[in-house]
Image (cartoon, rainbow, N blue to C red; front, side):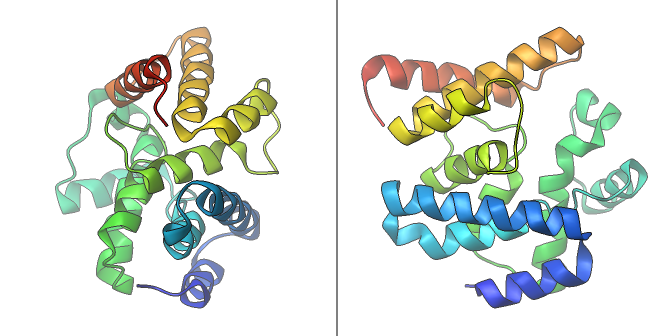
Length: 194
């Protein structure tokens, strides 16, 4: 398991200061969620939160070239909006260049942008932390923060609704993973499970 100290070293050497600050806030939020919902995952939540946006500052061209090099499957929407694959590209780079091999952490980094059905507790915590960390300020963020204190599924449902609304209003295509996650969390919320 990669240590928090090593993750911070990697960040400091590879991302701009504003992205590092965001990543630290995501890690802090993820740890708060882990303490509440999965205490055994605190260390993994911290490392995944720190490294989730490792490739977020890359250009579209760099993301696409790396994705093609590693054979990453991409939707037509992701080809037009490569920011959607920055988590998956980060996983490949972190695995190859820095030896990150914790599959739980890698999955959380992969799915933190779009989400998907069947996310693990750690994946949900990183997905939610990215959208709700203390530096975020957008319509609905307080609703999201309140919902994720109730349950991770309730938080993911609110996050998905906010994202869907935003994407529909912008008139851009919606990734299937987001819709699948929304539907799964809706079922879970109706069934009363966390």
